[in-house]
Amino acid sequence: MKLWSKGFEPDKMIEEFTVGNDRELDMRLAQYDVEGSMAHIRMLESIGLLQPDELHKLLEALEQILGEIRRGEFTIEPGIEDVHSQVEFLLTQRLGDIGKKIHSGRSRNDQVLVDLKLFMRAELRSIAADVKTLFDTLQKLSEEHRDTLMPGYTHLQVAMPSSFGLWFGAYAEALVDDVELLAAAYRIADQNPLGSAAGYGSSFPLDREMTTRLLHFRTLHYNVVAAQMSRGKTERAASMAIAAIASTLGHLAMDVCMWMCQNFGFVSFPDELTTGSSIMPHKKNPDVFEIMRGKCNRLQAVPNEIALLTANLPLGYNRDLQLLKDIIFPATAELRSCLRMADFMLHHIRVRKDIIDNPRYDYLFTVEEVNRRTLGGMPFREAYRTVGMEVQNGTYKPNKEVHHTHAGSIGRLCNAEIALKMQQAIDPLISSAE
Image (cartoon, rainbow, N blue to C red; front, side, top):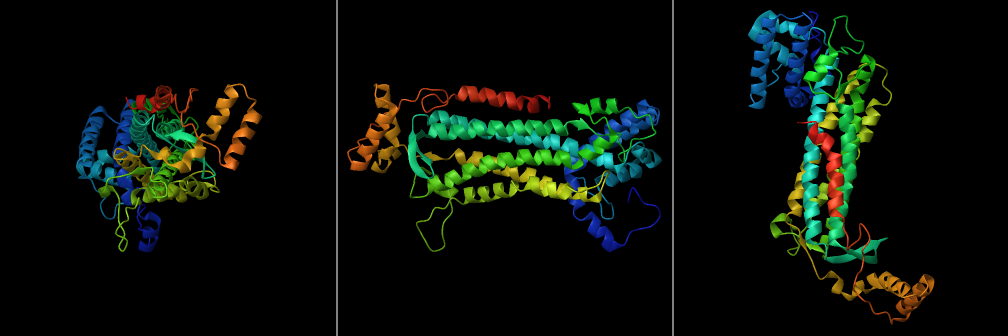
């Protein structure tokens, strides 16, 4: 069944090439297709294109289909082009000609746009929830290890004292910035395109404000051409937020891989959370974090892939846009998988507490010594030169006491303030679901 059928069938090879795996991808849109249709027919009844009894029957049938989707009983049957066609086919099969009325005032163009907007809203909220879970874990670890010192590095050279509290807390606050991008992408997705039809509106007296309210969109895409132009823009904005989170996760994964290496030995995990070697019996490899790092690097390519797909398209709908689903759908699932795995692994991380006792880290405290002498009245440049000469001639002896008191430092992590920043960033996403 094809909604555009005019009495002929396309060549099978053409159909296979143009449809591709769209049926499988469309299964993730099924719930939103039904929800969009329910709002649409309520609007059609309000403007006289459906009778009240017809609306009642259609809503009842759509509720039944929605239940089948949620129970995993819904499929897109062979020979049916997409999820929109399957829903309309089921309605017509069960209700007769009434089912054929559901498409009045709609095009598949705005229908799939509504589905995608609803899908992206839900996915971005789910990603935000997973980010918040990881954020809470990082903050808990930051508090738990606030006094456990570790080396800080610049140029991968021993630099200054850091702490595990500072390290865990850094990734927590980095996620706040990522959620800001996530919230911005959500605002772009949270606009109603229904009623734009094929991109040029309709001669039916559609009540677009009504469907905006029914579908709980923040606003609508007023200009019908702009509504169609949002296909690709929504996905691109979401992909940038996904890439930002992936970047943070990828950096965290790299740190863990490095800290697990015997040359560092800063952290470890239970044996069952590591993997081994086929010939080296001592190996306990950080495969989880290596795979996570690789997946996150791939996710950072998603915005570029979307940009290249959409960059030179002319105004209006083009079939190229169908391929966006094949890019963004797996990306949201992959990111959520990485977020959940990172949280799981961090619940089992073991932190070494005696790292700085090793003499190789004595030079971490040269800056502390310079600052201590400067606070005692010695000019900074003189203190710097004096300590530098002690290092050069081998007479430097570290004082391993650390006194950092300013906001965001080892001694004052400001985790409560960072938690407030996260709450303010994530609130628009959470409140929109209520």
